Image 1 (tube, rainbow, N blue to C red):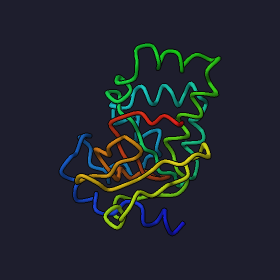
Image 2 (spheres, rainbow, N blue to C red):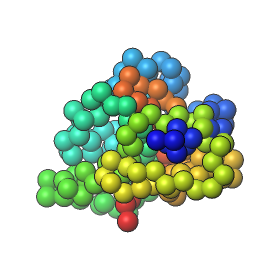
Image 3 (cartoon, rainbow, N blue to C red):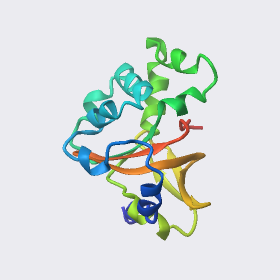
Image 4 (spheres, rainbow, N blue to C red):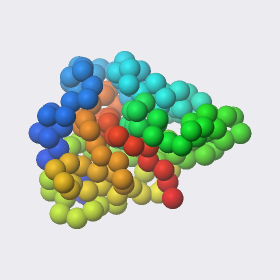
Length: 168
């Protein structure tokens, strides 16, 4: 847990400069992760995927969770037809695996990112690990860049990313 607590550091200041969602992070602290994502309006694909995967109740649970949330624009970078294929009932297991790869047990805030001196592996809810690193003036999760950090929710935190994370 010590590694997790050291995870994100400097990005709180950096993220303030890169606000991608118009509502201040603190304004969501009374909503859970799902309700916060719905209210933001830029996570329609992610919310649809969470519903199709049957993970709504889990992400409304007590947590805390850290979710690396790809925007609709991030999903649009995937090859044509990928999202539609994943939303089919026969691919539910793949969708669940991908979505759980975007979530970590515990609340990881951006306030710890600057303390990272090298890439750090963090175990996701699907059992595989993502690599978190501070480089080039920002936080990266695998190959995704955190474009807005620390959207506080009643059961955790959302960090907005610019690409969909795909487990190997």
